[in-house]
Length: 462
Image (cartoon, rainbow, N blue to C red; front, top):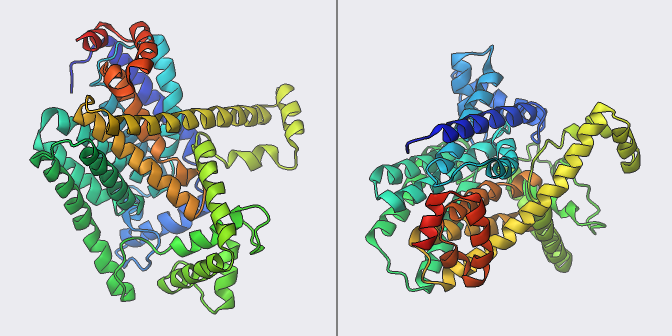
């Protein structure tokens, strides 16, 4: 940990407070329906706590194991402790990312950073494994940055441990490894970067850690079902639901969980997230694609655009029904303008939603530009290049998955924290000319000279 001055301690305290504030508004009312948490995660965690056999293949057992561990410590304060652990880990990761950067914390910088971090803390406080999967990705990229700078093996080992834990939370971690590694290696080879022994060790250890972490789950799935599984068995349900997301779809489906269950009932399958139910729904989805291929292509394009323009979560969707039930948009606005508290909350949520949609869109376009620069320019340092390509690789993977399968805000949000820390890291490094190119560097140099301290300017002029 670098030496912290008084400003850094104040910023650290503010970030911790922000994490608690945003998380407390999000944890109990959130994007994850309370029924899903209670039925899928909390109840299966109680099975572990009571010494029972984990009897399902959905969800993966990482989050229920966390709940079980906390339950063994205290049942009375179970939810509060789970919340405290998630917020503490999320805030700790943010501080580990930010504090080593050479930034002189001024009010304008802190305000911008606060604005960017609200969706991060909103997501990492979800009562679901999504939060831990994102935190695992954040930590792995943190380890990559620190390892490239220090070459200390502890960062490689730590990344492998995070990979082993993360793959037991959600299958997105597998996509993160494959897409991030693939894009990073492609970029390295395209610019004829020398393939080093250290990079080979990094990627090998990361995949070995993920593989070792999955072995217990594969054994569990095989003993339970006779099938080796790398992830949970809800992909069929999710994909089948996703066909309803294009307007006026020819399948006549509604966008709700009832559709997969209705089809499963028609073929005599009781559990839609069993291996049998998952296979049946995947097969039905493939038949639907064969029947209306062009409609499916349109659905993919439609969801890709939605992910690009609507894919960041900042305040709970579950505030909506409490505030706006039975009201039109104009009625809600009129109620907000008269000072009605709940309607004001709705107004803030709506304005924030559009604001963060714009922020995320600009960040995505900027990330694609950075990836092109990382491949084209051989002046960018290897640690910056890998950080950019890893983040953009996962961004593309996420957009592809939500386009092909199903769009939900929580499925599209995970790349956002990675993009935030990638951009902040680059902005604080003082290397705009290498990263952005001479033309854009002139603009960013002016911004940097105004907002960053003497150390950043010295790095820029070196």
